[in-house]
Image (tube, rainbow, N blue to C red):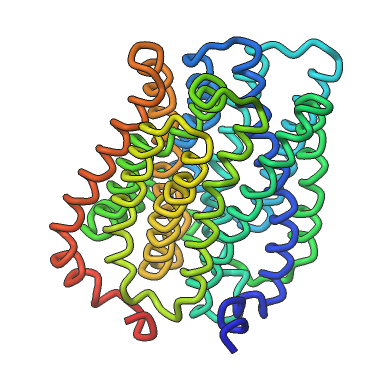
Length: 414
């Protein structure tokens, strides 16, 4: 019975198709992310360039997400996701082609990372907004988001480890090629779906008016504003630690690409455990407390990671890091999806993407620069301290936010 509750959203045919296809594709995505970070470090041994690649891959989300949200609410979301996945496939194949041909340089990686960031600025909020259309029962949204997190972190557990082995044996180009081919699975799944149309604002309304309306709706309601600000602060200060993992793997822990893959996978173990816990929950009751505490867990894990100089100890710490970050982001996503109005879902989720993914490039760039002066461990320690401070402020505001959010919560979520 508990197993059925844990996987109840998979009873929806459309979500099963998405889950299977996206799960395969995400393994390839994590393989590419691991390979790109290692390749840039191997070619340059420059922490600033590592930060710049992370900056290029995420900054378009910070700039374009609000406009993407307007488009998402005005378009057929399934077709939009199919288009973004197809272009992402071409980006991965371009990386593979350049490297197999021997022409790949760091500036190519930065340019193609920028292209992927442009794609993701539309793809990520579109996929988040599309969840509700894949489900026959609206009450399955909490479980679907949590299971999506298990899929992401399951791929995060598998992909980097495979990438580390493939890089050591064959080089990074194989990872790029396999990632490109993996997109076939998710595109096929989307093509096989039968979904209802998403509600859209009247097309006669100017896009700028839709943008202003979405901004006022999102930031005019204190609970949504507080949730997004907490996500933004944690993403800026802490989530960019992933860009520094090659430095930890080689300079701090005296390892190689496989060490980096093991670190990413260890973080995924904790994240996967947190996602399974969220999937087992039957309602959103108590999510506010989890959202408040999770950044403290994440921050404490980052501080311990920065202080550790032993591989075995760091591998024990990484699951705490993954758990804290995943629980906060997935819980916030669930809360937003629960309280948002359907015709504004794309715009709200675009601001969520902007806070989650869009702030990371600023953090990546800043951490890359700081790492050159004070070292990667101290950058991670400072980021962890900032996350704990942000958590403390949110805890103080939580009682007042609960009063405001209660009237808009669905009856089955209270």
